[in-house]
Image (cartoon, rainbow, N blue to C red; front, side, top):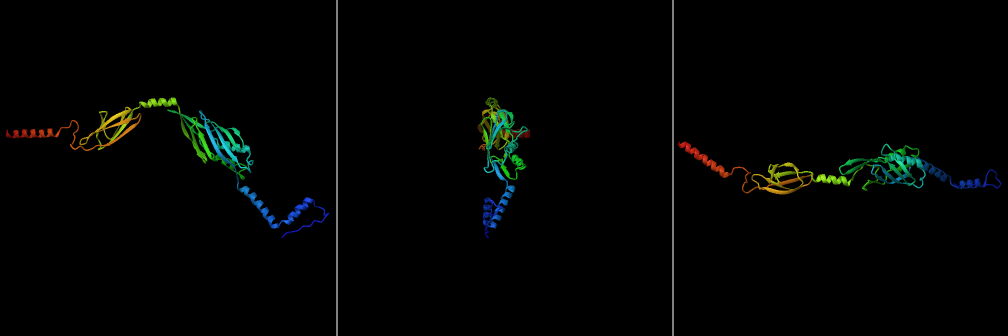
Length: 310
């Protein structure tokens, strides 16, 4: 039901503004006023119980220096309506906590509402390896910054996503690794090749002896390497000079087999062969022939016959 209010001319206690507001108020239905008040209360409570997304991490690029330190460029977005809701000092503090990787906290080189530049001391551990230097980076848990923000004074109305959409790590030689939508940057390993060290290793390896592993069917056949008897199969024969070598396999009753293999420096070449049965049994080297055996038997029989006659 709509109410009407009439103001008599010359009535005291009301200014023109009071009269206008009161007239407008009396013209609005009472139910609408109550509904508007209720909506205002609900919106206020919603802000208290449902934090607004204020900070979104876009990208993080980390460049590792030769000494293991690194510089990081962190790009982020502050949402328009609440762009100024997070104090800059608080945001900077949470970033430093979230990107800390050692006992030395990150040094802030630059900072504004769209990005930050940081210096990460001892970000990578360097180990000498035969071919160069191996870099092992520290890990990062971006959730640490979110936890720190949750414990802050503005956690009831502001939330933040500190996990970059794209994270890139660039090593001193230009090699890079990239992760997408990851809340954790794992520890990464990469070897930066030193040409001088690599050349020295190649020279040493070029003369490193190799080996030949021989398996056969049947087993226990004689193995000859470059016409020199080296043992029986199966077996691994070490101390072989790098290069091409001739392998010969022999066994009684089987055809001999010859094969050429190449042995690389420090590596093991594998040989597996099946021997074919011979049509006429082949005796091992040094074994007496069947004719000799028969002759011996005949001579033995003759000798016994002569002894009986006597």
